[in-house]
Length: 202
Image (spheres, one colour):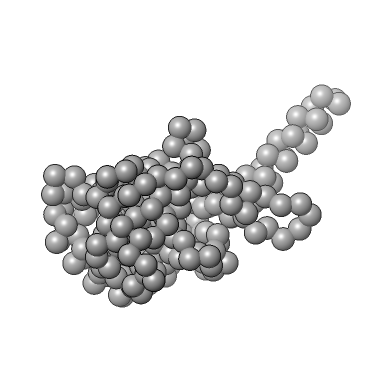
């Protein structure tokens, strides 16, 4: 009986920890429907959106650029109020911005893009950027002036041989995979301006 109770206690603790991490870190890793990492709800669409405008809900800025450098992994404070502190790993990369497709123009032509987790550990983002990659990133801005993908892989696109590539899970965004850059940028610019909250987000 004692062993069974211990197992149940451990299982319960894991569920609580996963719930906290999911709320802070986001939907792809823990299956939650919303993200609050920057102090405001911004992503959360999952893969069941009804339109591209819904799929882009929460995007603050869309930029095209080149990855200059992938920086060493750093720890970032999750900002959970309570006893102790919780930190998680991020892999920063510097991006040389060549075009702002949508949103407020960054203060500098080089921005710091934060990637969830560590590539070798495969703990968070499925797709990581690498030096020299041509990318189109759909982002939200952090209070300290850096940027996250607005919804994990949904916001990470690479330009390969003239075609847009992504590991997006969203049914609407998947329709744009393998389109050319002009078609892609025109579509996301138009719909980002009309973005709307998905029905399943309260």
